Length: 148
Image 1 (tube, rainbow, N blue to C red):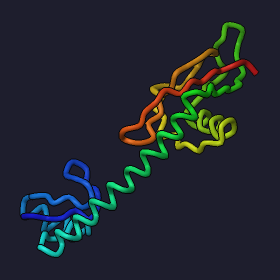
Image 2 (cartoon, one colour):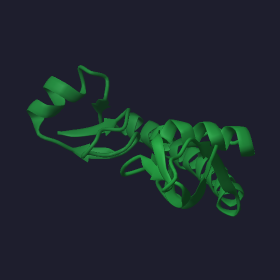
Image 3 (tube, rainbow, N blue to C red):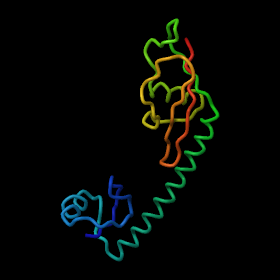
Image 4 (cartoon, rainbow, N blue to C red):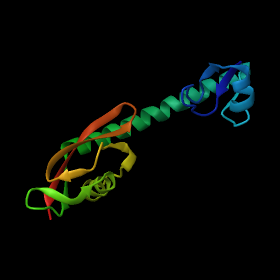
C-alpha cells in the first residue's frame, strides 16, 4: 500500500515522504491516527509541497543552530558551586544548571535535552559537554566549575 506521510514516523520516514507499507499497518494504524493518507496523483503533488516546506524549515533551523554554535563554542561558561578541599563538589552540576548558566551568561536559550551529559559534573575544573541543536549541528561547550 502506497501512503504519503503527513507527520514524521520513527523508523518509516518524514512528513511528505511517499512510503510503501503493509496493508494492515497502513489501514489500521497510520491512516486512522492521521499519520498518513493514500497516495493519489493530487496527494503526490501535495506531498511534494510538504517536502519543500520541510526542507526550507530544516535549512532555516540549521542556520539558526550554526549561529548559536558559533557564539557558544568561543565562550567558556562559568558555574560556581560549593566544593570541599579536594575539589569535590557538595552535590553536582546537572544539565539544568548548565542551561541556566548559558542563559544568564550568553543570553542563548537551550533545552536541557539538547545537552549530552553522560553523568553529572562532580569535580571543580574545566569540562566539555556536547550540545546537539540540530541533526547536523553538534558542538562542544566548555564549562568551568569554580568554587563558591
